[in-house]
Image: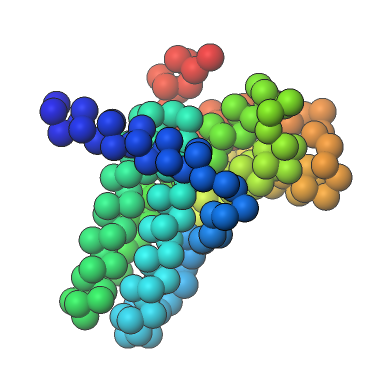
Length: 205
């Protein structure tokens, strides 16, 4: 319990620092897990470690954006897991592909939830959040959610695939026109019901 409280304090501190930093000064990272996997398959541990370190930095960057403490703490745990894998790759230790796939699937699913929550929050305060940011979060949520299935070795069912497709359509429309389509809220809600467990969904405002 004490460890979790300390983690909560740490998350709040990191989020505060991220919020205080100028947005344009923040570097852009990417969670390119497919590239990491390819590099590991090619036995290029050095470049795999570097690419994975950028993915870990992306998770840390998004942790700073999170407005949900529970999600923020889980992002912190995900970053820690990725950093451990980075250390193993740098040490030229064997990292089994199933180990990578499991970590990537879990992290992608978490990032999908995080970006979904960010988009939902942005729709509630349209005067404070740029429409483009909402579109980027919807698109990122759809991308990470779809990718999580591939790393898990499964396929989304028809309803989930439709929710992902609709989210991508709405995200593309926002980014190309800077206008929110009329069904943005409906599409976002449908995506959220696929990402977030029903018991948790029922408690959201």
